[in-house]
Image 1 (cartoon, rainbow, N blue to C red):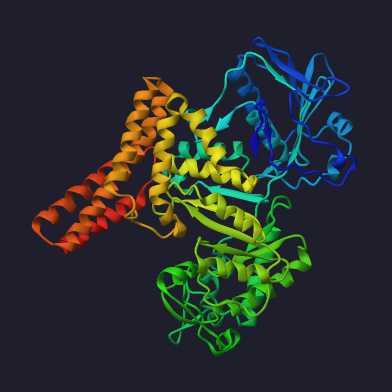
Image 2: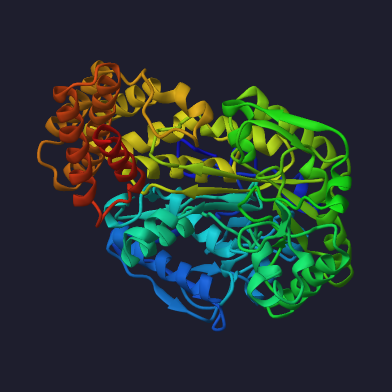
Amino acid sequence: MGISDSGFWIPSCCRRGLSALAAAALVAAATAETEEDVSVVIVRAGKPMATIVVAANASEPVRNAVADLQSYIEKMSGAKLTVEHVAEGPGNRILVGRMAAVEKLIPDLDTYDLGDDGLVIRSFPKTLVLTGQSDGFTTPWTGASDCGTPNAVYGFLESLGCRWYMPGADGEVVPRKATIEVPGIDIVSKPDFLSRVVGGWAAARVSPEVERDFRVWAKRNRLGKNSYHEGHSLTGLLNPKEYFKRKPDCFALVDGKRQSGYAQICTSNPEAVDLVSRNLHQMVAGRPPQGWRSYPVGQNDSSLWCECEQCRALDGDTTFAYDEIDGARVVGTGPGAYRNIANRYLIFVNTVAERFEKSYPDCLITYYGYYCLPGFPEVKPRDNVLPVMTHFWDNERSRKMIDDWAEISKHLYYYGYVGYKFSLPKFGIVEDIRWCHGKKGVGMTFAEDEHSPLNMVTCYLIARAMWDVNVDAPAVLADFYEKYYSVAAAPMRLFFETFDEATRQATREWDIHASYPATLTPARVAECRDHLSAARTAADGQALITRRIEAMSSYWRVVELHVGAQQAIEAWRAGKSAATRQAVHRASNDLIEIVESLRGVCHYPQRIYRAEGWLREVDE
């Protein structure tokens, strides 16, 4: 997506369904020539000129979006718009969501190719419509889902200049506009990925407040899970506590003994297949009918596979070898040669999926296509199976694996990390997202394992790219520098670009690193520090801009101390002495101290584990 000269948010590719409107030109420009004036004045000179209209029985996601629409219009202009439930009335109207008045203005809305999250923003004489095909809903199991209309609200606010770069009040940008006039506008847009998740697991570990702010940030940036569930679910579907004593043969035979716990199950055992299928049906039957697109039959996070003759026969005779970097870690195992475990497990998943389809033809079965599953299947996934590609890296081996999966699968889901072990800029992630979409990607999840201000910049970029894979990443970042850091934009841009350049090669396998690359030299560290210092000077005491810079500076201090401790342990390994040992103690303890001091705002657990490991190493 991009920003037009008039300041309006315009998707780089607007999509419509096959309707009479499909041939119509999509216009989003203040200079549009129309037979009648379809511009809508919302606020003039700080006075409200429009009323927000929403159905009295609107869904919770729509009600929340309307509250934000009212709030941000007031933040921008000082004018608080009235919210009503009747479409007819004096003055201009902003119609939000599905209602009779919207159906009359857009009678063929349900024929549009919008999907669950697509949006329509369209102006008519004295009326602005913000809607989707779905108003969204919430369930105890899924939270908010199918948020077409809320996405229209946040897309419209974005067109007015609002940005939510980071969670919390300091992370948003709201322009001041005494007058808000919407010119002729007609936008129809849907996301390129049906499911777009940036998981706030690390944010949740900081505090409930930080987790709440993260969830709000995700909603306003039009991220949406839409309930494509994936996970390590075998233990839940065949619970060892319930079944192991009664039916031990349903569980993996390892080293001559049946194993429970994190070991896998005996996928060749017909009774095990029956139990998993039955328990899956019972689980699904207990869920609300809305909001579930897929259910996981994901293997446990373990390499303990059954060694019985029947299971081994399903593997076939082909073996697969993996080395440490290019293959083994991406498969979630150690280096070595392995049987074709992937074949036996897909046979099992296909069997469960075939039975599942009879009762739930519109739902999919997910599982991790290669994680803890050495090999490559000799059978194809059924069309109702959605293999999940985990730990997808930008290297030849990983991409070849995904190429092979794309050849045999109808669709793929991708699961990766942002901030795994520690944050790096990863601004090249947009290229990876675009590539995954081209390889039959229908959904993506990025796990956020370190919560930091730097990580949130990358998360924002990911959110943009998952909606529109053709997004202009440099333009998005330039918009961020200018709007978020204002007078300090130039030095902050140099900070990010320097850091990204110094670490970009490391991000090619970006979810395995626990150390900074050698390319982040002391000179580069000092250069980044100087850019931050220049930004403070440029901010000239402006409180909000200074706080934003200081938040990034606190994170950078963690980086500096981590690099220092890393250099200290390398010096000790090169020449063990009392002096180098003391240096490791000093540097590691400094790192632990600053990480502990930031626990209330950030989440850096791997830094502490790493520093404690260095201390143990020199003290042994």
